[in-house]
Length: 75
Image: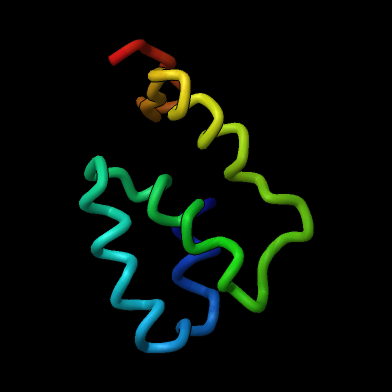
């Protein structure tokens, strides 16, 4: 789902694309990296579907996708 959207999106400007690893290294979190890059994608859903994930991240909660379940936990 999220992975498919990122993979199918056209590549970003080279300088911005390089930042994806820097964003990932903040917390070794691909969803956080995608959220921080979201405004730079030209073909993106109108609604920022990653915002709820980021709001959870700011409060110290994390999520994991295990099989068909979403697990929310405090770090």
